Length: 369
Image 1 (cartoon, one colour):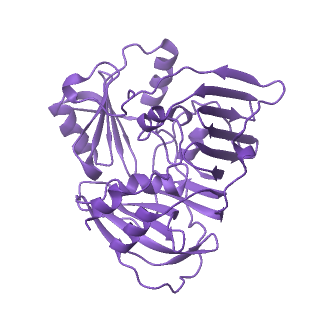
Image 2 (cartoon, helix red, strand yellow):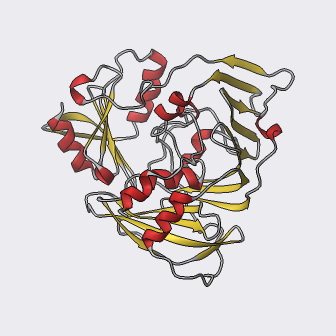
């Protein structure tokens, strides 16, 4: 069985988080330590192919637990545009520092993620067709109705909230662009786990390795670590520190706004359309997004938004002022670089981004200007 065949039949055990709940990738970096792992346990040998099959056949009826997530993306310290201060449970903090989340899952239409802060918490809740985004600090909630098509259309534009979702994305790049091997076993959240190591074959990628720790019994990811090329320090990691595979009570997914809460009803539609597919380059409009290339060196292309409001333009100017001015045969603009990715914002308003060095973005910008 090929690697891709093993993955294609794999059940969708994704944690569903709408793109509206996650900010774009701008923010500072923070030192990241090693998350919840102890001495290496003794486990029966398993090959990489066997571990992939384990993932394919895993069945996750329900789970709850505590997740710790850290990011050290190597970005410059940019202006805080979210308004949240230190200790606030703002979604944008997932791009910086170390964060604690509580998670509950009871099937594809019942999921809850709570980002815990010292000053409050922010909750994302899906219960059937109801989606809630709740901030205890500001006592505000946003509600909307959503369909499966909405969820699928937003699947590639969110920051992963759990090891499962992060692993789903990493595994989507497997074969033929990825070398897959078995790493060391570990004990994570009190459970024995195997480790699957994914390494891009294309050396143009800034990603060195992705390491996925897989529960030896339940076959679901317990931890994911992403290492930049040439580094032994993680740039991103997310892991369970406590986990329970019992199905959570349905009460966890019912949300009633507390007294005095400000509730907004949202009718926003997914950015990528009902199909969830990006448009080809020759069909782009002012809000179109497409991709160039495949695998780990894919470049995302977003055309400029000429309808931006003055307030948005002012915030954008703050960010641009912190970035490096660049120019070339492709034109001119500003560059944001990190340990895992690069983002090019042209003066025309177009955006090019990928897990690649800036030179690759310049090539794509020249080809598709």
